[in-house]
Image 1: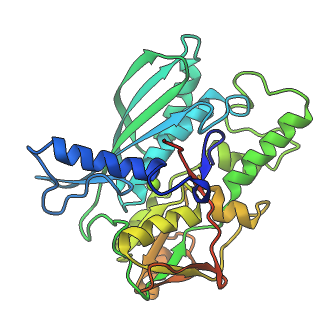
Image 2 (image 1 turned 45 degrees about the horizontal axis):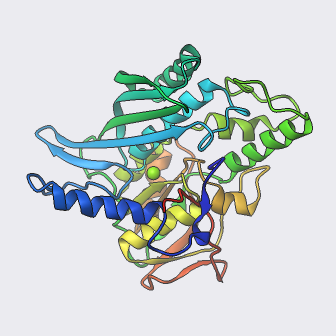
Amino acid sequence: VLVGRGVLVGNRPHGELGEFAAIERIRASLAAHVRSRSPGEGEVWIGDDAAVLVTRGGQLLLSTDLTVAGVHLDLGLAGVDDLGWRALVTAVSDIAAMGGRPGEATVAVAGPPATNLDLLYDGIGAAAEEHMCAVVGGDLSTAAQLVVCVSVTGFVDGSPHAVLRSGARSGDRVYVTGPLGAASAGLRSLRAVAMGSGARAPQGGVGSGRAPETMDANLVTSHLRPRARIAEGEAARRAGVTAMIDVSDGLAADLTHIAETSGVGFSLDHVPVADGADLDDALGGGEDYELVMTVADDDALLEEFDSADLRRPLLIGSCSDDPGLRTFRGQRLPALGFEHPWT
Ligand SMILES: [Mg+2]
């Protein structure tokens, strides 16, 4: 849920612009400049949730994520500790989306000199403890705006290997680990209360993931204190899912990433909507950090989640061999979801 300066994926001027075109240009530029090393056997560099590197000890996952005040979280509505929590969780969620377990993180912070670093690191530390990801280093700089960059390693125990976005095949079924849209609805709830009160919340916001009593606490917590689905990602990998991604940009946009890298289309029949959210939140809101996966063997998937004592994933649709097919209940899927507007 970008709180500022995002554009709807469907509203970008044309295919040459925007975040995803920029990533592709960067990938090509780096490949042209850096000739001394290129992706080795079994490695995946730019283009998935996390990079997959091959070391003597096996596969190493590596992911990095930015959280920018005013873009990803509004500090008029959220606490600095919430921003720290989010920064750690988004990075860890990308490891979960590969079916990995987080290892260690480094945290780089740039922000105004008056930034409450103690509160920021309260949030970072709480998320690190919750997700069992130690913070082992970082960097600090002053800057005009608060930016937190978290890089995290991840590991894949045993086999099979890390789950990529590119493995979905025609006929695979699409599952999601839980109802969607709560984070988006939570942001809307926070905004409504802030506007209703006639003033923005004081600097520091509501803080600590707590919602005023007039709001739906579950929705607000989904926005301020999301959780990465590490156990679910590992169970999905063990069950042999063919592709996986975390819902960060919105279900429609994130599933499109799987479809484009896998060369398949998809049709959705049922999208589970979180209590208090609506269908647009569920399809386009993003930042719920549920995992979306494609699988050939449904029974193996459900059995693996059962034996890990996890809530069963929900069937939402299937993949087709027509790469242009993107439907919801038979209708062309609306272009929802967010992308940073690079020009
Ligand atoms: Mg991701």
